[in-house]
Each structure stands twice: as C-alpha cells, then as structure tokens.
Length: 175
Image (cartoon, rainbow, N blue to C red):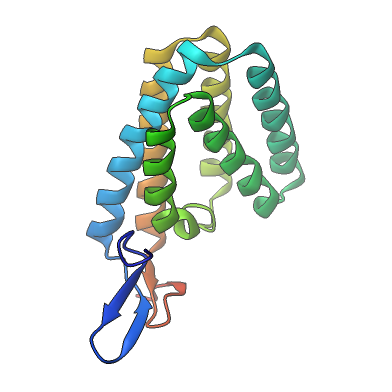
C-alpha cells in the first residue's frame, strides 16, 4: 500500500526503502496539491457550517499567536490543521483521500522548511486572506488564494534545497 502511494520503493530481493523525491517530484506534487486545495476551498465555501468556520477561526487565532511567540513548530501544526479542516469542510471523501495521499509525500518538507521573518509574516497574511474568503464563502477567491499560497510554499521548499537521504530523511542540501 505504501508503495502504491509512492512513499516507499520495493526493491526486488532486497526489501524496500523510503522513496526519494526530486525537485521535479516536489514541483509536480505541489501542483496537484494546489489543485486539490483550490477545489476543496470552492466546495468548502458551498458546504461549510458556521461552527466549522468558527473552529477554523479559532485555529487561525492560535496559529497567529504561535507566530507572535516565534514558535514555528506549533505554527506549522496549526497551519496544517487549518488546511486539513478546509479539506474536511469540502465534504468530499474522494477529494480528502487524494489530498491525504498527495500531502503525505510532501508533508515533511512542507512543514519543516525554515522561513525568513519576511516570508513568515507574508504566510500569516495569506492565512488571514484564506480565513476572510472562507468567512465570506467566496469560493473563487479562496481557490485563488490557496493556489498562490501553495505556489509560494513550493518555491520556499525548493529554495531551501531539501533533498532526501538514502534513509528517506529530509536534509538541507549544502551547496
């Protein structure tokens, strides 16, 4: 099952190892993730309940506090929860399953990449726009914001120079 999802490579007569991701793999996976999150945003705006919006707003406020505290690990946890809540609010289990599969392959890079103070501040502003569009139930606007947000994250990940080691661990490439 892990091999089918691209998370491990099966080696004949040698077992398995964690699949390696190239820069092209990262680009391709982020492009698919952009499309999935954009669609999720559109559907969520049609289907989300007021209670779900309130829960996302609460998660957003906590994430912003982690930003103010300079706690990147907790910020990333809150960030991930918000993105996953939007996908859940879309109410489409097929979309959610595809999203889980794709994001599993890029999760570590997506949520461990160091950010400059400027990029971090910009990401928070993007999240404020995400919440605003969701609260207005502006599906087209939210889809556009999510695509741009993930495009920016993809570039950040690629610029950070992540590569995978033989054991599948992500490390920063040293030029």
